[in-house]
Figure 1 (cartoon, rainbow, N blue to C red):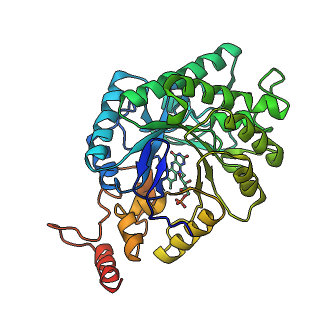
Figure 2 (cartoon, rainbow, N blue to C red):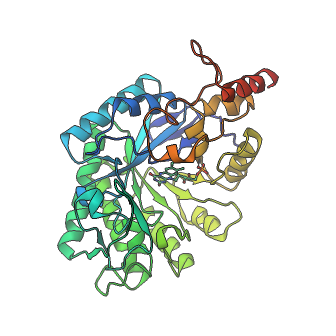
Length: 376
Ligand SMILES: Cc1cc2nc3c(=O)[nH]c(=O)nc-3n(C[C@H](O)[C@H](O)[C@H](O)COP(=O)(O)O)c2cc1C
C-alpha cells in the first residue's frame, strides 16, 4: 500500500511526502494584490508539505474576486511573491501558484471593473467587498478579443510566477470561477465556438492551459477541476460527458498534474477521471478539520483508488506542522475562528502552534497537541 508520508516525485521535483497544501485564499495581501512578509512567514511555517499550492492569484485586474486577494500581473506582485518563495525554499519547501480569474464572481467595488464572463448571467448571490456584502452585478459577455486577451494574460501571469520563484502554476478551472463558467451550461449561453457543445465549452480551459504550457513548459503546469460541484451557482448539466472530454484533451499536453476537488474514491466521475488521466493525479477529499486517524485513513483510501498525491486545506491552515502530526498520530488543531480564515492579520494566520514550539507560552491548543505527541 502506498503511504502518504513516502517520498515521491512530481516530474523533475523530488517531494519528501505525498501531502499537498491545497490552495487557500486568505485575503492577507496588500490592497493592490501584493504579497506581504506576513504571508512569507505563513507559507514558510508550512514548508514540510510535499508541495504547497499557493492561494488563488489573479492574472489581471478585471479577474479580481474579493478584497486583498493576491495578484501576479505587476513587478510589485512578482517582488512580493519572490519573498514568499525564497522563505519557503529556505525552509526546504516547494510551491506552485494557483492562477484564478473570477469571471462573474467579482464586483466593481473590488476590481474597479465590470466583471467579464462567458455570458451576461449574474451570480445569484452577494459578493464580499470593503463595504460589506453587495449584490453581484450582471457581468459583461466576453468578446472574442476579450477571450484572446485573457488567454494571453494567463500566459504572462505564468511567466511572472516562474520569475517570482514558483516551481509551476495551477490553472484554476474549478469552484465556479471564470474557466468553470465556460464549462457549465447554465453560465455559458454562447452560440459561438466557445459555447454549446461539450467540445465548445471546454475550448476556453484548453486554450488557457495550452497557452500557459507554451509559456513556461507543460511540466510546470497543473489544472484544478471540481466535477459536479455546484458552488458559486454552477450547474454543469452534463458532468459525466464534460470531464472525460476535457481530460482527454488535457492528456495530450503532458502536464505536471490534474487536481480534483471533492475527490471521493467511490464516485463514478472520480473513477472515470483516474481511468482517463495518464498523469499525476492530486485528490482533495474535503475532510474539513478531522483528527489524524480519519485524515490518514481517507488519504490512504484515495491513494488505493489511484490518486498519487493528497491535497488538504483546513488541516494545513490550522496545523503548520501537519506532516509531523500525521507522522506521530498526534491530535490536530481545529480551525479556531472561521471569520479569520478570510480576513485579518497574524491572528488566525501565523499563530497556530506547532507541536514543539520553543520560546513561547503554549496556548490551550498546543497543550492538547503536546499531550497527544507524548502518547503517540
Ligand atoms: C480559507 C479557504 C480558502 C480557499 N481558497 C481557495 C482558493 O484560493 N482556490 C481553490 O481552488 N480553493 C480554495 N479553497 C478550497 C480548498 O482548496 C479545499 O478544496 C477545501 O478547503 C476542501 O479541503 P479541506 O476539507 O481539506 O479544507 C479554499 C478553502 C478555504 C477553507
